[in-house]
Length: 249
Ligand code: F6R
Image (tube, rainbow, N blue to C red; front, side, top):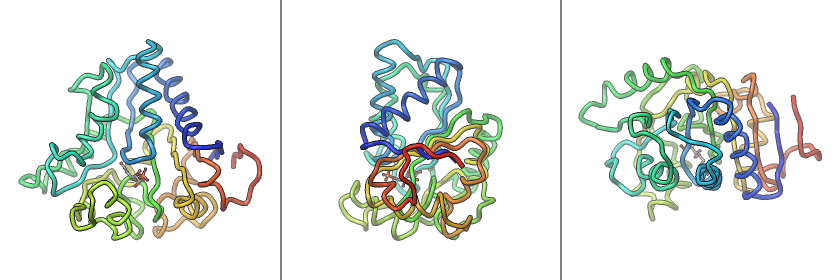
């Protein structure tokens, strides 16, 4: 795991975007794993700028999102489908058929996880973008879920629903279930870039990087990934026992 500490959210976003841009220039048909939430919004802004500056194109890029809520329609403004359109897709030349976001059609609930899982194994991600929950989750692999999970339907942790109520207005409106890539799918990506910022992530970041590998902190499994970069701001790094801005272990 490499940990790169930046001054603030803007620097985290720039650095993470620079990494992705480099990968897209080297491999224009990159298979990119995407995250939603507050953390990657700045990164996506920087990618849009790089696209507008004609440094990169998305026309041959394929994307696979980590997760999607179950219990709200894709057209709901807080669905991850809407999020991706709002924060990236509508501003670039990605082809509709190259966009993959877990289907959340509850009338087909029994088939959804297997279908997405099959797709994921046929399309190994070159690089996977991750955020981290304040409870240490990645994707929606909540504390206690198996580290050998493949795509599955998960009941969301109360902490996650509380954290995400900021998007919905009240916790009652946050869906109780989601479909998510499992840890096994995430670990199958060739490279991983995890971004985090803010004091509210400091404990999760500490446990992810320095704690034991434990189902209680699903992100701790990333210690075993051969190419995982963690790009965080000073607040998110505030509990780490280090002073340097770049550490590799
Ligand atoms: C989102 C996802 C989640 C978020 C995490 C952090 O697709 O899989 O793991 O990355 O909950 O969310 P933010 O960035 O909103 O703090």
